[in-house]
Length: 252
Image 1 (cartoon, rainbow, N blue to C red):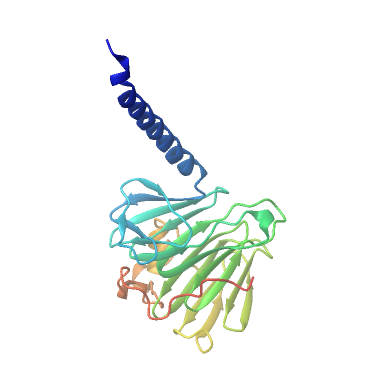
Image 2 (cartoon, rainbow, N blue to C red):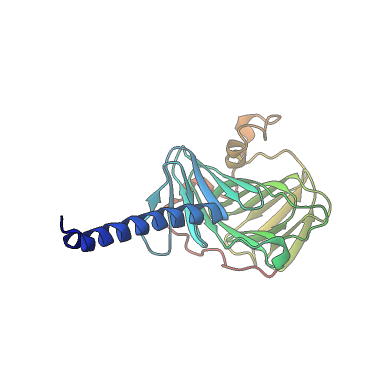
């Protein structure tokens, strides 16, 4: 039997097998090294990279920096980050996910909520500096070791501190700055942060979008007839970019 006739074919087959194995390993390493994972909880969840078409999420997917996560009506998603922090994304929402920055980098991880409601739980060691910033078209919220609810719409922002120790949360609206603690809520009405009206209160949250993403945890003591979303978050289409998207970076 003349083996020389088969050697080129054998070499090509071996090369293809090696390439296939390396490709599988690379894919596994990439998934393991991902610091931002988007998971579908229910309904229709999609994400977009730059100007590419939206991609639907069937289960879980590792998303790169600056990916735009979108949920449609009656949908829900969960964003997991490398430090075990989590962000619940409610229905009809647009959340742009910035680069994940480790605590020692000194840079904040910026998440821009363009529309809808989120519930976030940020986990950090005691005494760590604020390295998460949540941005909306009218505000910026720097947080550490905090649980909160944030709603953004074409008419403003609503932020509720569910568990915020003193010094953990600072919210900026234009040139105004507010240090917040547990139970405080900031209601921003208007589309321009320089002129928007801002109210700081300590009352139960009555925003229906926040109540929905809390699975009813919020608003239990208030009749549904009294719930009000001052941001108008449900009036906009999550697949359409806002007229004035949030800034990409933060001064924190």
